[in-house]
Amino acid sequence: MDDILGTDRAKRQAEAAGIAFEPLDNGFLSCEDPKGLNRLCGRLGPVKIDVLVRKWLRILPHPFTAADRRAGYRYDISILQAEFSLPQALDRSLSGRVFFEEVIHDNLDLGRPDQVAPIFSRRVSRRTPGGFRTRVLTEGVVPSLHVDYKKTKIKQYHKLGKALRTETTINDARDFGVGKRLHNLPALREVGFSANRRLLEVQRTSCDCQIGEEAFATVCAPVVVERQRGPALRFGDPRVQALLSVLVVFRLLPDGFSNRDLRMHLAPLLGTDPAHMTPGRMTYDLRRLHLHGIIERIPHTHRYRVTSFGLRVAMLFTRTYARVLRPGLAHSLDPYAVPTAVRRQFDRLDDAIDDFIAEVDLAA
Image (tube, rainbow, N blue to C red; front, side):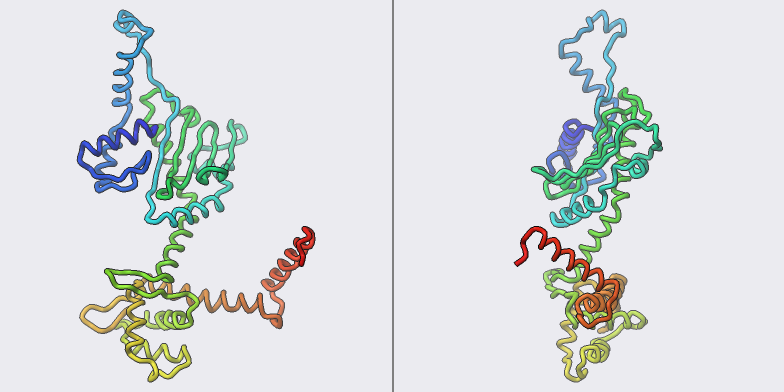
């Protein structure tokens, strides 16, 4: 529904029901009772809208006389435009910015007929009227993604740096085989909200990238858990790579591992004698692994086990470092390495950059 009619009414209803909330312009940023608020929003339907409009028709100047109205002549109410929005509050502004940058980068083809069809659940053929396009607006406004289908538009943007807002605006209900009279609002609402959900489903790859971004930051940045600070597990730190390599082995131990087990396996990977690695240093490593959720302590023991999250992080980090990053850098940087496909492409890139600099007369 239109934000003025829908959102403002919902805010007043929530206040009357004693539901605390934090507003976000024409939406909600947070709410202590989301289910209760959802029920309040669901009460706005054709009957309540009709009552509101009839109230004002009785007050405003009317072309029908009292006799006309008694004879049954009256205005009918139709839907000229309907907007259905789905705002999703974000825990950090950075999360929304990173996500939306990925959305814009990965979804420039959403306006194509083959993409529009699944979003709106409509069959699109050569005879389907109207235009199909995607626009990205960045000049002088908050960056936004626009998808056009006939007389319907979907707009998506980062709302006030706090939420991802997806809104479908339907300007002609007949685009979806729905009539314009007010009693068709439930059917039109299903079209609008379904389009919002399908668009987000199409964009799930971008969302997965953001999930990975947060998981990477969770591991590689310092954390604070119940006032305990856990130092970062930096991806390029040799000790961290060695620790994660050992954990992959420990995952197979049914009774977990101890401080001593970790020291005995870690020392050879670092090229040192286990006797030179103090239990205190191992306690430091165990503590930061635990605070990052990589390992967990077995109750009533001094032993630990690798979590499911920890195993996935350990396997991905160690294999990416050993099989992709190190050999990739060696192939691209070593002047004496055997020319590989990666090396040849980097050489071509260097040549192309040099040629471009020469063309614009910027060479030193």
